[in-house]
Image 1 (tube, rainbow, N blue to C red):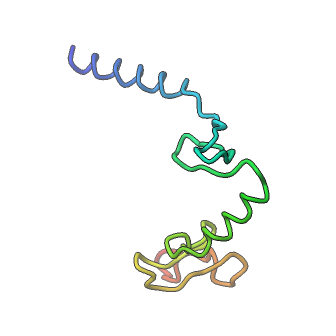
Image 2: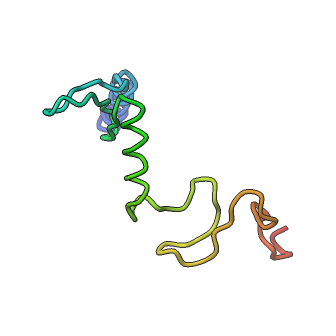
Image 3: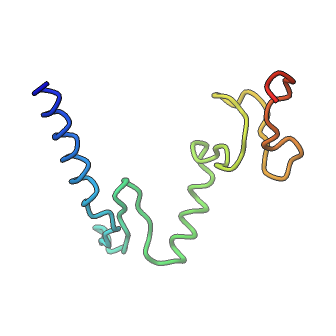
Length: 101
């Protein structure tokens, strides 16, 4: 019983500390003088809008960035299956099984 209480208190303290972390981006300068913005999740971007747009175009060409859009439905791991986009007649239609309706 005492161990369970200690675990619960430790988890509550962890949640409280995590909620108070500063999650705002940090402006920084690279070695070659480029102004960048560092995000807490590890991402970064140029502060200059023109350079940021150019970098986004380059990043869009990498295969690991060509994934399923977040609002799409379907497609299994490895690209197997059909990708259903919003606006498609089958988008969010649910099961076709009469027992499940």
